[in-house]
Length: 151
Image 1 (cartoon, rainbow, N blue to C red):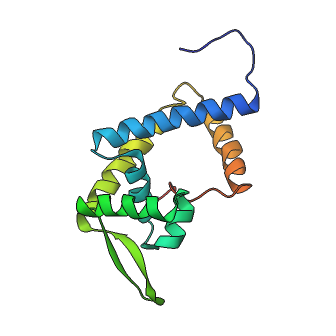
Image 2 (cartoon, rainbow, N blue to C red):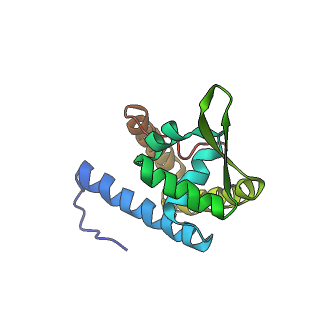
């Protein structure tokens, strides 16, 4: 599969390459569900709760116009809807529709399964170490909650 020269990758190389690997798995899964990777992210983020446009833009790292387009396209598919924000009459939140909940659940479950398979050759102890170390990287940095342990 990869090089087995016994040489270790630098941390940056390993993290960047693993990011590309996870993104490729995520994109392939999204395509199979008829989604763009960005729509997949949107659905996964909204599994937790309806979210205001401002917060959603920050979580997904999108400018207002890009986020509006993403929400519009996903709403046209009947997967999300805009609703009034109960805390701010001027604002709207984005929420999953019934169809969006079903698709998000299926997409999330399958994508998690595929990503969980990436370190299939690891022992249970190695997997635990990987979770511990990557968990610390995530906790020590400002990472949006796109995926969570229990949807």
